[in-house]
Image (cartoon, rainbow, N blue to C red; front, side, top):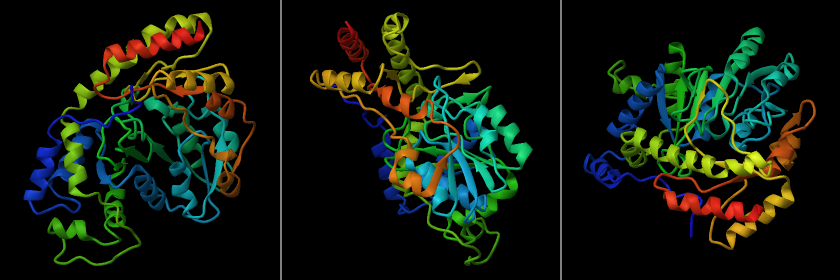
Length: 375
């Protein structure tokens, strides 16, 4: 069977986990957490990176740092994971969904301004498949209306927009290290902070509302409860697993990119015939081969293709059900404008097997069978 995903493992994960255990420090903010934070800061050139228990929690922290209140509105695409919306719904915000672009499946930056109201507090661009949204335009709108920008860069580690790492362009960026991501700690995430003045507040929120971080740096003689917060620290065991992959980040990137480029090469003849659509990477965007997807003609064709490949022991999956069409979507949000592409494109998209260590012959086999299906 060709699986859809195999969590990345480089070989040193067990060794580093054993080191964490030997240190008698397996709760959060030990040496492996610090190593991960420093690696992310160095590779993204951001002011501060704080490892979290998930990308969901990183986004929740961003909502707290942006002071999201009941009645506020937050603009985002409907084609995203539920956590993108939940982080703000938990604080009483209403979600305003905007249609996506058919080429990248990212939020259509030309429709955002029409969704802005006096209650709008933030814009949340989602960098789908590690391919950047049109951030210059989004930041221009945010500046015009004094809005916060929280980048959902869950899929965007090692991706860039015009030379700038994703997650570092808005006020805050959120990474995921879930087992399906390019670099994984099983469950995990990271909050990227652009502005220095927000770092101390973020540390307090992350440490259950205490100034514990300042205590460990020797800045206070004891720590105490100073603000609202929660426990967003991952275990050192998770951080140790993750650090083994961050050390090999370029090797993992190159391996995935080879698979991505092979898929594109083998399936391009079908694209040229108009049988299916392939991913689009706009100029100025450097992606990370997070996923390779194709788009069938419609839902019926996609369903038939999934079944055809399943019988050949090839696991493929579709992706998000648009949030505005879900029960909670209508309860907590509204769609601004017309849904021209969100539902249509979501029903066409099919994700192919993609992971570190995927064999070239398996990529070739998958492509051969897709070609057979269309023949």
